[in-house]
Length: 550
Image (cartoon, rainbow, N blue to C red):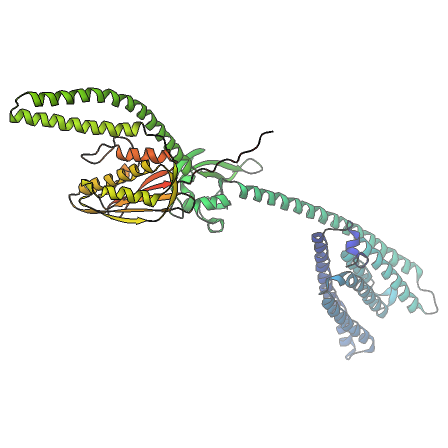
């Protein structure tokens, strides 16, 4: 819409932004609608009431009241036309001027019909000026005042005929209308200035609110705020992801339903929670009060983070450090034990072959030799755990490595009462194949011992597959007695065993080898019995690109 056709836009700052222009049009549209409604009500009450009184006084419709009825009808028709014109936004300025002309015209007709300068309806000029000022502010006041004064002079001259109109009355009424215009124009400008300031404040508040919302939603830690009644008022996006609930779901609800463990009186704490997805998480959180303007508490805020992976990494690092220290001590101790053990075993062999022994002495000699062999085997396992060879990585198929190990295990006495089920999918991976065979061998031995402890036969399922990220997954599951929940965290520690003949080094060695490959080994309980060991081998780290020097 051209600037000349929209007075409201012409009074604003030049070239307003599209959003600001739309706001101006919407404001002018609202004023036009309300003033059109006010005009119809005013004409109906004043003119319609006057016409009705005149009709009742005369007993019939007199000629003097007919123009009033015509004025009422014309006003209704014009108001309907304006209502239709308001549907076109680019016509708003023209409609505003047309309504000012209509208001002044209706006032002039009514004043002319009811006594000109002596009419009691002269105040309708003032209403027309007020309406014009409301519509177009200062410009509307000037236009409506000029039209009202001119129309009043024209009515006065027309009613006086060849004589002069009562000039003092006409001047006084014109001056009163001008004063009213000046006052309403000043008030309208003050109102518009206040509206501008309010709009600017609202824009600033909206910008601050949007910035605050963006900051809160961008924080990687979870944030929840509660009111004085303990109801949730805000939950950011990170909090939704951690807790598995949506902000819309919890807003306005009692916080104890979801955040009971996060409302400890301590300012900083950690706790274990189970989120809405059933995941068990370790959360660290900080609680602090929200203060109002006067320093009074208006609620509580809780910032929380998912520390599950961090704590697991810390535990893994601590476990690796303990195992490394233990390995260094064990290596030296094993060497010190191995030498005297070899000497004692050799001496027993010499005594056994050079001296005539009775049955009892022979039995004792056999016990010593058998236990010596057992100690030698234990020392060998201990040395394998304490001093693992370096990882010699090469690209292999994990399925082929597992198949070779299973073929060898099939001829081991421990496999006599075990049925092995294979589910081997080709899985290229970069690893040390010899050490991976030892991992699978130890897991198979562990499963066979668990099944043998039940005194019957059992089944072991061995599976491997690529993980889709350049790594591989190997699993060994048995239907033995399983692993107790209390033992799950200690099962990979050296010398921890639940078997009568176990050394407690097989699974510790598995953990050591997998950790050296940068992987992870976990145990999962099976239902109703049994356990499943899962080895995850990551993709090899990508080589850093070389950059020429100089």
